[in-house]
Length: 98
Length: 518
Image (cartoon, rainbow over all chains, first blue to last red; front, side):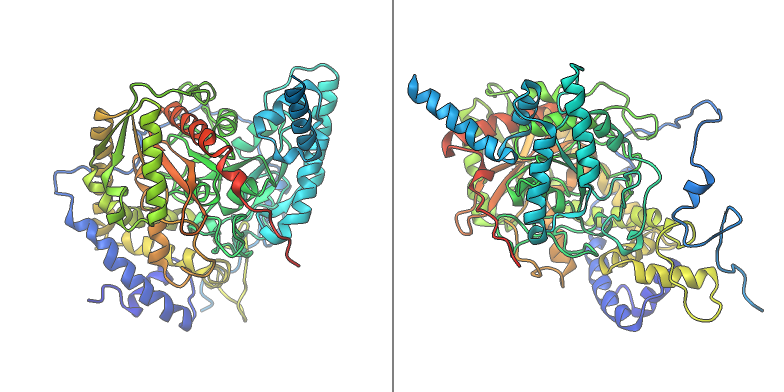
């Protein structure tokens, strides 16, 4: 039985901001369908009363005093930027043209 | 008398000729005694890298200048009578998943091909504080996703035992560097077995410490609840020394454990296991699991050796381990899909700009398609799907429950025994290209290593010999309760000493000389 169609994969890839080409979509969709079928076996074992575990250790918030400390300079922070302008990251337009 | 003098002299002569053959412990001793300088030692490794690494391809970057600068400082400090850390002057290689200030850090991905971190990971700071020359950055599967290093965007690493075979993964660069004597020590990262499985298939030692025992600050994140940094080495004692350097609390990592580091160095001197209770995990040991006969034979021999050392060996069952792989391949992709969302082509990393006047969204889509390889895309899509509305409960939610059951299996097992053992990997190193078309076959390499990551317990792989059918190395996996990492070193060291006695040397010494390829 197919769990994940080619359209599903295209949709999820879009949500994950990966613009797949057609050939990639063909290849990955077939593999992902098989993998999803296999990982679905987790549904066979745990009953409703088993608590979920998100982390191997009990987590508590870790805080520190809110003090000004040494940090990256603007130049260091921008050194890896694909594009920078006026001490800021320069990005493509984020709104549609119309 | 004269015989032993001659032997000692000739032994020292051979090692002087090639100090890369020494253990890290011996290197440290000679540096301290002044019979070897760090510059000589570091240069010897750099020379070997220059000669052999074009063939092995363990390194993505070699920092000869930086390594020699550290070596010179250490030699000068020693000459001035300064007290130095134990491993001062002993070189180390670092997996390309750890940020190194001023040194390109790619995580094996085109996405980060040009990324030069503005800061050091905490473990890199610790290596610098320990005054260890950093030789360079080692190859890995892209973003640590893989078991063969074939998913590196910069080409595979070759196994020093057989250049047609994989060195394991994702940390195949670190394991191959150590196995090929290109570095005595290396840093690895283990999310589902990426330190232990490479160690097994290259005849070396690798430890995944307890979750949280080593800082993840500055480590490129794969799956944050599973990732753990650890040492790769040729001997258990060498691994213990590096473990001690990198372990310990770090305020920069909110999941870092604030507790004393177990005495792993002391434990690595263990020669006797009298009274130790060893449990063989039925679900990840045995030929009915499809493990290669030679792997299984060496495992049975290792169990005999453990009995010979005084350990009491029994079988234990961890029934939910059968579901560990499935749970892992939901939890890891889910966490990875979130962690890798940061590669948005805006602040750093690859930016691909499609024609016309693309929106940020189109730039992201094109950049992530061009910057990520197939395995990374598969896992991001799988994780996004598992976390999506309507599927969350059936996939991610259910996997988290299985994780609880696996942690309970460990708890029950450690109520009966002190350590658990299994073969580290189901087979010896497979041929390059054999599994690249079949993601599911690749995943199964980690069947024995994944449960430890899910529960957060420490694990180690130590060489157990070579398989009869192919002459390639096999590993024994040792697992201990959380924060009992010293038990791994005790069992590993005692077993290593026993095998060494039997075989007249370390398993790694049986590796053939590497033939340089044009």
